[in-house]
Length: 285
Length: 230
Image (cartoon, rainbow over all chains, first blue to last red; front, top):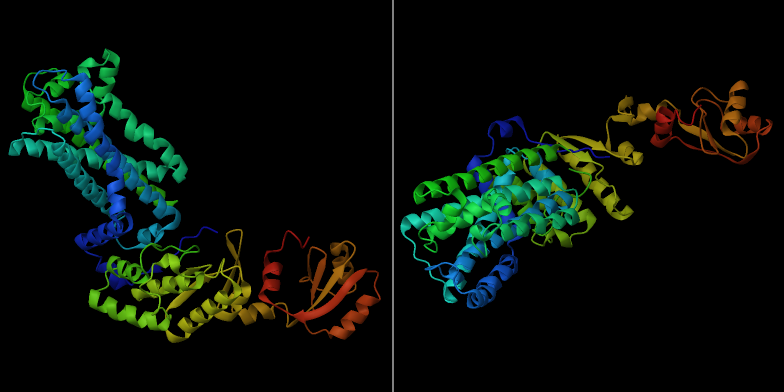
């Protein structure tokens, strides 16, 4: 028998609904306690990107050299690895949703007198916090390995906005898939396609201009392509905005950066809305 | 409270209670006091700071009931709370629910397939069949509908033919029913010895004949058994 039952709060309690901030903070603390209990849970997703930044990028740099005058390949790939780190970390965060549903307290939380979207936002806030921590660590490792970043305060804002919006969108994808996939096995099966495959096309290791025309058109449609071009522009790895030019073909860097930020923001908003909708619907099943 | 355990297993019992209190808007000081009260009532004091994954099934159930009571609900839904528990823990939990019923004025709605639990714990029992309530009354009244005592025959031949024969001889009423090879006949005011003697004179091949007290299981089968009482 699959009857959901709840301990009904009294009318007074319903009227005095839990404050939004307090509820969100509670849900975020819960998610943090569940998914970041040990340093291992934060460090493990960092391993691949850090190995990439510390070992593979310098090695490739040595072999390939610089494909564009004035561009440091170690720095180029260091930013590229963020494009691997963020989707992997957010997809791992999505696993928590599946665990919650299968053997955790999801139904108890759904019965609580708080909007269902708060559950998604609580999870998202922790995914953002751990992702941010990992991106900072990655940048630190890259600097130690010889990457050069020269960013103005505006550049840092471009970078931070690109990372955060891309992470929000990626988490939206993860949450949506987690609520659509019936089992953890199926979810894990789609992780490579969602988190890793786009990375090969999005100008992570080489510029977009080196791709065949059809693939380049496909790459331009990927939010990750816009996010990486913005991050490189923001941190001064691609000061002239060549990556942005490869996407938009314009000359005004600020306009191109704004358009790419808009593309990433649309990705973030669309998948956040979709994830809340899918979660709310799946909660009724 | 849900049929399956719905808790954050890697968190401590206290943390689970705390999360619930915060989400249900219970003021922190009141929540702490209430947690202490519930820990005492449900005997959770020794385990409350341990991760819930280390709890036994019964301890987890007690924690869940305590959690549901943190916000002082007026109605408590318990969805098959004893399913999957071993008999000892099951009886322990039944005691907890019975105690809760005595101590508080909370309305408890319990769904269960173990009808002796319903008989023991409930003031009113609704029997559901195919999404509809087919019987609703106090346990005593439901039991009374079949009388205090039943005659039970295990037959070698067709049980439906046996019921038809018993009815034709006015030894069974419309409320007699069969489950598998067992024919159950409510005795109402008939004397058991006289009924058995009468049956022995009929052309019914039985492997055993006995009498026993009516249970809610019999009432349930009688009310829902259209598959078997043809």
